[in-house]
Length: 407
Image (cartoon, rainbow, N blue to C red; front, side, top):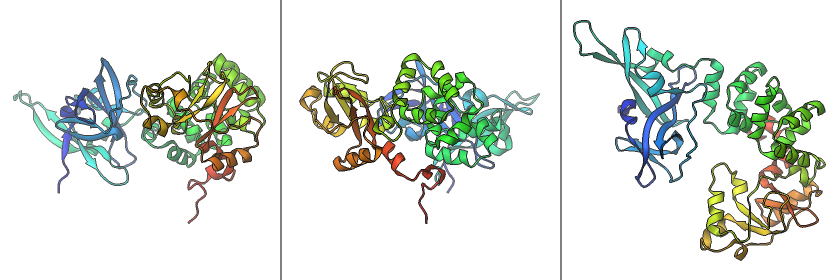
């Protein structure tokens, strides 16, 4: 059975549809990244125009791509502006109409491949050639590897960074750790700030330090801005004192103050584990307000699982802490109900509590996160179960790509 092909020229005129088929915009271009060795270039996503802006839609969010349009799996759309990244190629901008000898690229055929990494891949390239005596062009269809240079990025490091972009950070960390140190650093330099931050959070602190060695202070602070506070605190603790001081001086004043507060807590205590980057809302806020907050795509799953309720101010240290409302409760209540009507008072902990007792508290009460309060009942932050797992697993668990599981 011959696989069905869909052509880029056609795709770039299709509508972008939500999960119910309602048009949200139009596909303007297709983003591809090079494959390894003999693998074909893979479609990373689509550039679409929606609400007068160009946005990026990851290919993994597309439920169907056919002649009716590109239909999303859900109703959520990330409206952040599209920004091209190193290693990526835009089929419309960078490939179509390019010269290949005495021929011109007139179209690119995409094919859906199942298997270990299912998705759309570049399969064929259609080339056009005009004769001197015949104004009508002749066409031929060739395999993608005949014109592989069309899809090659400027450097091997940019290509590797692009290939890793759609993988889970944990899997990327495994790939990075398998590379020679110098190549690791080159790939890290080619990554965008957010991606490098995600990968750093999945590496042991000593390997984090080796990976970022050589980055200038501006790049370092940009990457650190993207890291979770608790992960960044763990990294800064491992830095030499002079380097740590320089990093703190270069950071935004508010962020630097937050980091100094986290670093002031003794190692092995709840204060050293917690993150202040949590959702805190007023008791007068509604269930609808809370659902809108936890729907924000940049919020971690463990943080979005609950909303902490406190009087102003709503950034730690907060006003008087009142309790927590879990995501499941929010789904059951009327959108107009206030959080004060559905808040629950769960046990909190003090920042000096030992890590072991923190783990026991989470396990005893089946919590995804636990609030950390001071003696005045002000919320300082929260500790999530994933951070407790990091501490309770063997110290070198990240060094084993299987997570310490032996067959």
